[in-house]
Length: 171
Image (cartoon, rainbow, N blue to C red; front, side, top):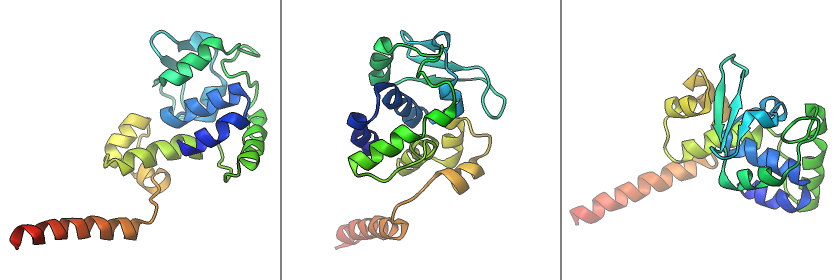
């Protein structure tokens, strides 16, 4: 989420809205850029996806801030975020990252990868993450999408805290 906060002042509002859609909903860029206004119900805060990469239809819940932005965002090319093709969405975040002094992340990283990693950090199981994110396989979530930062340090801290708690009880 810090990534989005850093980029917000440096990207056009429609790009910020697109990134704000990708991050908490875990959807793919191809799904997002194809949204038409008829696919989005702002009153219910839902976006309907007719066909996903795996062939299933899906719904994505929209965060309140995105709903507010979309209420005022004019559609272009008949699309909610205004991008007619995915090739147009890469340069604005690259420039914004440079201006904000943050590392550029391809749109997939702050979307699907961040979604899985955030839930994994909150102790969700891979199966629950796969179900919530529409992945067919928990194994794919484990092998591709969940990223840990300093896993050895975190494991030592967790084990150390549990050990200290047990030792304190016994003394």
